[in-house]
Amino acid sequence: MEFCVTADAPINWTNALTLISVAILVGTELIGAGAAAGWAIGGLFQFGDLLTHALETVFIAMALTGLFFFLRAAIRHEPVRGQAT
Image 1 (cartoon, rainbow, N blue to C red):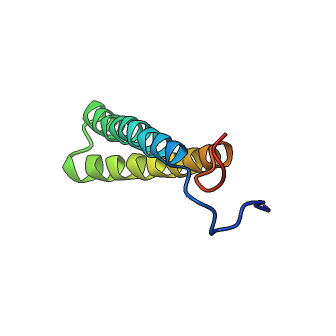
Image 2 (image 1 turned 45 degrees about the horizontal axis):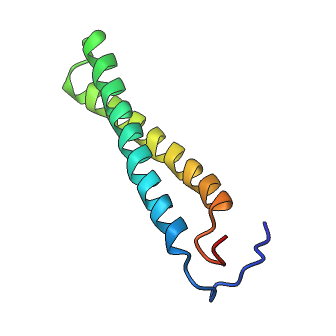
């Protein structure tokens, strides 16, 4: 992947604030859904506390991975460094 803007370019604060806001919003939704899914599956199948917490951890890790890939794509479309358009 090649970037046409150097690292010393000024920060585009409009894009930066948009990306921070989207990270908070989407991250909260994904992590909440992951924790709720682990809790619901653990409760539905009566797995007990340890396995339920393990499921929650797995689903939250998947949510964080999804958030990483989402933000990586968002940064490609809304670059933080460079000229404002």
